[in-house]
Amino acid sequence: MFSITDHDSIKAYGQFEAPAHIRTITGIEINAAYRDMEVHVLGYRLPLGDSPLTQVLEANRTARRSRVSRIVEQLRAAGYGITLEDVHAEAQEGASLGRPHVGKALIRLGIAPDIETAFRSFLKRGAPGYVPSTHITPHEAIDVILASGGVPVLAHPGRLKDYAVIEELVACGLQGLEVFYPTHEPMQVQYFRDQARRMDLVMSAGSDFHDIRYHKRGVGIEVEESDIRPFLDRVA
Image 1 (cartoon, helix red, strand yellow):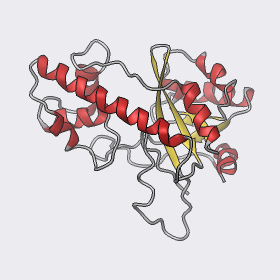
Image 2 (tube, helix red, strand yellow):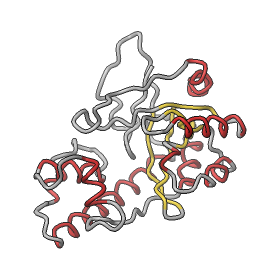
Image 3 (cartoon, helix red, strand yellow):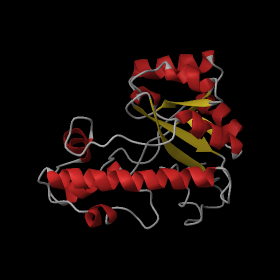
Image 4 (cartoon, one colour):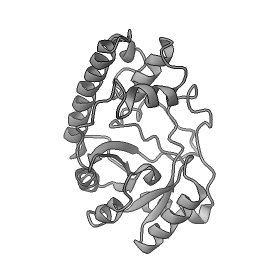
């Protein structure tokens, strides 16, 4: 059983055929912004045809393209030899452009040695290529996932600057927390496990895999079945 949760796109589905004994759960990761934070919302068990999600995804993709253009403009103004063509070369056809594609272009051009440095030195707040996101709010992301018949889960909550937003999103219909995540420290895992129980949320897991060149841990993450079973039942 597996799910591909690309950023603001479900176009991966239909481009592969899973082995007969493996079940595919449709999914997505919607980029959202709230209180000066990037808040990513995962949606599972989504329809692949037209749904309330369609317009939202197109709006987010448009915002992504505009943001990447501004990032490249700012990096060029700062003296770095990167073009939009360089960024597009790092994305598959139809992919939602984003900062990871800019980071990969910086690496290929020899401007940054690795993806962590690319983000830290060129793309995060205070860096020459920083451009704030203009995505929808996580509340809107949850609404559209629910309206499409999906299951909304908060992605990598340990990366949030303010955990208080979790309870606010639960009131909007959030159904799960991505408790198990590669960079969550043991204390964070325990904290989010406790919060999931307290707020009656299912617990999910994700490897946040983007590219084997930059995410050496690979695909997947080990989780006890008893922890993940309520989530799997919810998305069945």
